[in-house]
Image 1 (tube, rainbow, N blue to C red):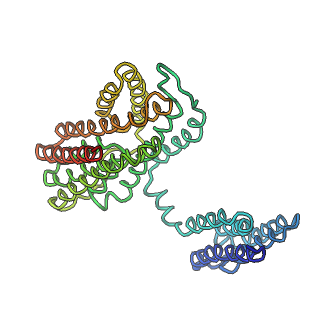
Image 2: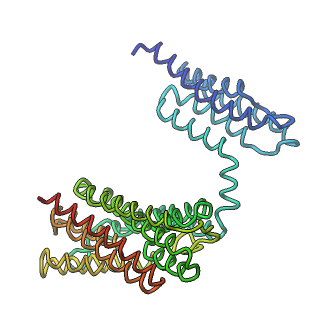
Image 3: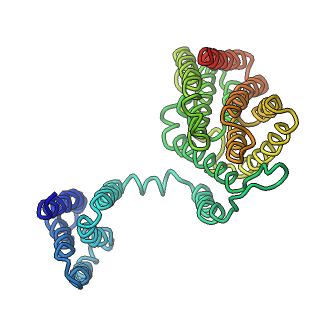
Length: 415
């Protein structure tokens, strides 16, 4: 591409990004008695940055930025009485920086401009989320989780240790962080939209937090509101869909070699569970509005997280030991036992053993499926313990149909 044509495209990109941002600021500040910048000012700021970088002369770009900062300061001083916020001023400075970036790194500039435009346009939604949706407890949980991700995870040693070299602390923490992040997204989804969409979304989102806890909570709901039994069954079965999606996600990240092999049986299980949940939904009575989270008011269940760390570490040790003692049969026994408590812990164990060379990728397949199937059996027991007889029968039937679907697909794929 000719240099002149490339420069024109870069200037066009700068104009396009900043016209988008300027239009948003123009609309957002239209009710203000005075504001320092509109659509033309933002476009000029971006062009100034792009032209200054394009001239490629030492000192021009910093001078342009310095002059812009002075002008922004004067504008803020004149308008701060009526509009004390600094969002528009900072956005104007960013447009100049992004304009310069379009010349050297246009892809990064386009992404930065899009992120800035979304942040500006989503002002009300972001404020509502921070003030009314997320509680103080959940914000505290988020801060602690961020510390784990930014401090604990990088410092954890990435080496195999312990008996049979079974445990890699770095992989262990990564697995738990993934599980907690998925659970947090499910919790936020349930808190944000679950109350308006009833038991279906509450059950589905709750399954990412804890499918077993969701089955138990729905069982208690069926006892308190017998007319909602079919809706509670629907939520319970949809939580199993979440379990399968979460399992697929973890396999794709930790054991990507098994992604294709696991796709069809997991997909068949999701389809079967969704159809059964849909049938229960059609039989359900008037929708019940969920006022509070059925599982927890915390963004993360820290006790469950520490329990999961212990469980995964134990499964890693037990899997390595049983594999050394009994081979593949020992792995199947371990995974079936571990699956009664959690369907995902075995993925971390198999991933660790494959990377350390203790088992092959092919040997890691069946323990993962064995853990998933045994986990469905444990949910059936929870349903019997927590809910009404009608709830128990329908949940057990749903789990049984999903298990049959997964096993049948595995058999057909092996033929």
